[in-house]
Amino acid sequence: MLKVRKAIEKHSMLNPGDRVGVAVSGGADSVALLYELSMLADEYDLALFILHLNHGIRGEESDRDESFVIELAGSMGIPVDSEKVSIPELREKSGGSLEDICREERYAFFERMSQKHGLNKIALGHNLNDQTETVIMRFLRGSGVEGLKGFLPVRDEIYIRPLIDSTGEEIISFLGERGIGFVTDSSNADDTYLRNRIRNILVPELKASYNVRLEENIGRTADILRLEDNFIRESVEKIISDWKIDRGNARINIRKLKKLHPALRWRLIKTILENRSPAGNGIGYLHVKSVIGLIEGLSPSASVDLPFNLRAEREYGDLIISQREDRSPDTSKKYSPDGREDCNFSYTMEIPGSVNIVETGGKMVLDVIDADEADIHLDNSVFMDYNSISFPLVVRNIRAGDRIQPLGMKGTKKISGLLIDEKIPKAGRKSIPLLVDQKSVLWVPGVRLNDRVRITDVTEKVVKAKII
Image (cartoon, rainbow, N blue to C red):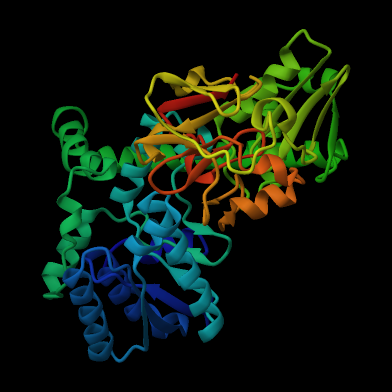
């Protein structure tokens, strides 16, 4: 037996009578998880359901995995529910990272299956090796305690990870001793992906040269950081309650903020901003840093615009965080000097570089900087994740069918509809310069930035764009 029973008891993962969906990809980890839970099913009076999502990323290999899981379910006499989606097609339509889209589709699938089968637990096959890779990856990206605590044994009281204390080597041994088959994902050998490079190159080197018990030690560190993170989070929640901070429009005395330990002040600002984001995330280091800059700066009156239509303002002795009012750009000077409706233009943009937009009298400037150089206080400028852009870039006016995914939103919106919503005069709409890549509109100056290219905690290189 693996360390599953111990992990279940340690983290109170299961209760008698639970209806458990087991996420089974067909790989070694998920198959071992399924067998372990099946051996505990009678003891815990569990009702097990196998869940499989075919991402359609690896073509025939993905279909092979799905067939394997369905056959496995039949041999074990466990109900199975399988769905197929095409992640490549979804990515082509909406942009974004493959990893993010896979995650969104996977958890949407789990939610549908939970409702369909009345499941109250979803068991995931992440093991101690996965935890090690996650912590190292986040460390390399500059994460704080929240990231370095790794993934949780239990999340939202629904998602459980019974293999969290079992290593990959122990799992392979468990399957081998019992003659249990599984499938292998060929993409795990592709070192194009950061996680694979960490798994296949960095971790073996660290274990061979520095610490053979790397996984156990990093797992222990993640446990410690998880406890410390819980303490900070509970302390911040108490401050929010004691100070009666409004979760809508927050007004906080700056003198009180400055008395807090910097770690608490940082987490408090981050929590307030995340409470106002649609999915409770998308707030990164640069955003919190910009608000802290308002608190520590000398100016008694300053402001910064943030993702999800948020604004942070310093008003003498108070910090105010609120939803900013939509403001239309000044189309009378830059964007529509003569009000012509037949004003068509298109210019290829180089990075770094600039282009004079003769038709509007304006100039667009692009530059490449490091993420820690981005200053979102700057007027008329936006900052975009370099690696999320599909080059080359063009600056042009609106075309039929142009769409954008507004910052903070999940879906896309027609540019024409967006400009109507922003109450931009019809005469000026066709002369607004749009920054466009090979997939969609990235930036409507003075109006919206595309969520696809937003800066995140993992952003390393940034494109700075401005209109002058």
